[in-house]
Image (cartoon, rainbow, N blue to C red):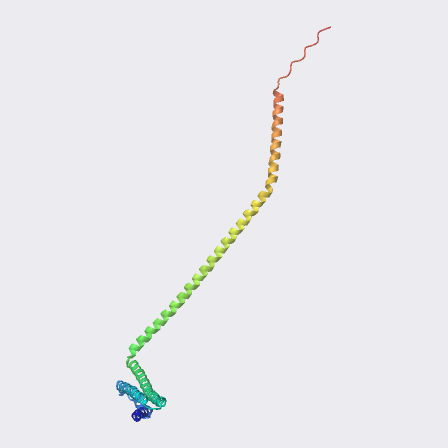
Length: 219
């Protein structure tokens, strides 16, 4: 059974390492990729099946670990070869898709390509205009914000100045209040004294004169 598995491993390695097979898959346009993938899937299933059979057989032998290690090594080698074949197929499919895309581009008519180029150019110009408009709007908004901040700062400074002037005026008024009160009191006293003097003079003028004393009798 081990010989069968080894033969399968050698066959897979021979296919994967064959330059002619790799070149055929990479360059031939008529290679059936689906069939190749189906073949590799079948080979992978065969490798797994043979590994399980060998693993079961190893447990019947005296050197179980050595037998299992050989079986695992053989499985890894076979799967590595299958992976290399899958990588070659994947690369060939990518190249085939790229070539098909280039063919489709070449098949487009010149007017269609010119139309698409014009549409792309118009789209690029519109994008550029939109970016410039956004930049201009941002600049205008920034200038308006700066002007608004300057106006607010000026209003604040004016309020601060007016408040300081009001406080200074209030302090000055409070400082002058005793002097003004004294001046008011002095004026009031002078006015009262003047009024009393005027009333006294008026009273003296309106007071009736006393009668003359009688003449003494003759001697």
